[in-house]
Length: 99
Image 1 (tube, rainbow, N blue to C red):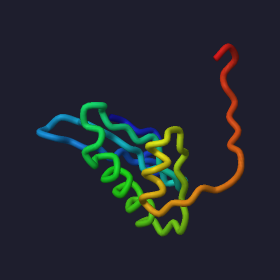
Image 2 (image 1 turned 90 degrees about the vertical axis):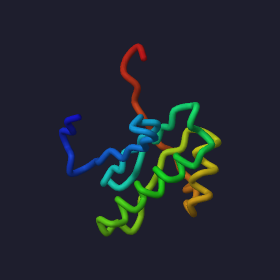
Image 3 (image 1 turned 60 degrees about the vertical axis):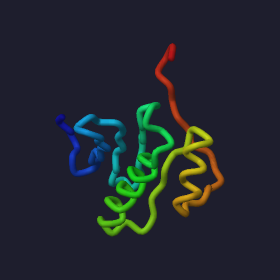
């Protein structure tokens, strides 16, 4: 896999018996997302392990704070479990025309 801006993001992969079962990107801007685990591997602790590895990767750069965009109740619960706090506010996005 080629990453155009490898100094800004690094993939973290979970493997079981040589099969990739989940992944996460530690983005050094500083936030991490996406975090994905194959459905049959959910509930096994892989998401928490990926999140902890991403947080370590980011904090190892000296970052004092980082964020994670949450789009599900599971992700929200995981962030809370890992000691993150919700920040009030709004994130704006622009969808492509017709999208």
